[in-house]
Image (tube, rainbow, N blue to C red; front, side, top):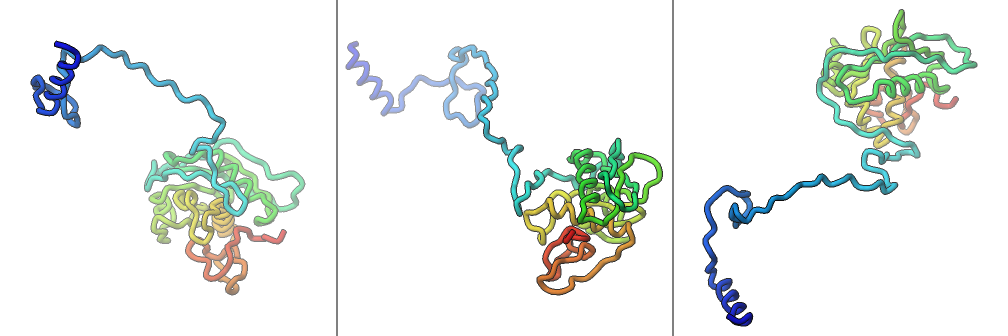
Length: 250
């Protein structure tokens, strides 16, 4: 048969749907036709190498900026974790040259939370020893008598540690010598601070530790005014502007 005749026959078969029957057998469910077993080639699968570095940041390396500040990366916080704290080892002295009273404190993180415990402890230490904070010299220790425990806690752990106060799995508190910091709130901040979670970190540490230093809640002094740090800013700003510091003007 000539090439032309073969082509005509092939096209006619295609149009009429006359093909050699395909044997029954297993195959991918989404495939309309399955090859015969004899037609399956022997293929060696070679893993695809990772792409070469491009110099561009990966999503994990991309940080959000808000109010000119680099914001912490969001993580997935479980409703409950182990229910047991681990004290962050080591310690940190207050900055040299300060004149305030030294206050010993420790930092603990509930096991099973997706946060770097040392990074959390470093952030707490930076906030408490900022010149705009409470004016004391905070020394972080890992053992011995302390005045304050700063405890990063899952929502379930927060609810337990804050009793008889009701925190709804959403708030933080001061209770039993602990500044109980709700890990979900630490992760996402609050509406009043918008995307500026870094500033909310400063507020919640100063606010809860402020209770440990003997300070009670304060109201908003007036619409558009700067909020006192002891205003319950996690719940609402009540018309005030957000403010994370006890002494913002220093």
